[in-house]
Length: 214
Image (cartoon, rainbow, N blue to C red; front, side):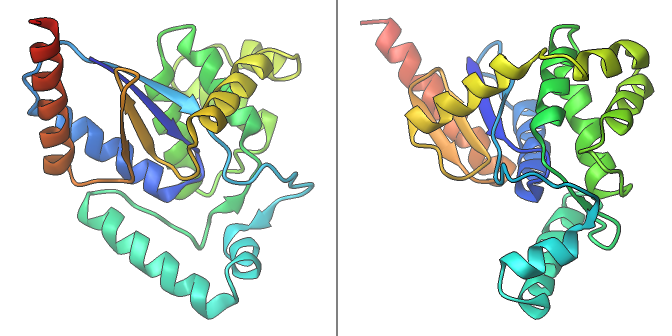
């Protein structure tokens, strides 16, 4: 089974969704599974200087009170899943370079570890993942070459790969993330509960087995 996940590093539901997919796969017995994460940007606007995420989203979602309600809800959902979202520390960021770094790490067999590190850095540790030096340091924290990461980010490396992921998302009509595309034919949207995801994967495996037997 081949699962492609379109997600954005600064999307809290993508953070939750990845965690839930990992848990769903722990109880999945439908054969070998390959998971690949694809780039998506919820907001491609430039962020010229670090801005607290709360301030940025308050302006976008109708004021501080509405934004605080949203933060409280997703924080509680994440906490129930064992994840810490610290919106008081989070910094707004354009994620294009972060996605490029994930593509670079993928070439070294470290895609998921890099993604998890960036998500935790953004949501829990208050790191500015729009900063190239910060991104390079985070790459170094998982054993990749920090200097090589910084050099890569200063080049055009990964630009085509990220743009291609975003273009495919557009072609598929993906407008919200996370979106899980299984075997190129089935789509599951949203951070579904692990049991629901596992049921969906089991049903897809069953259908594929029936089709293969025809």
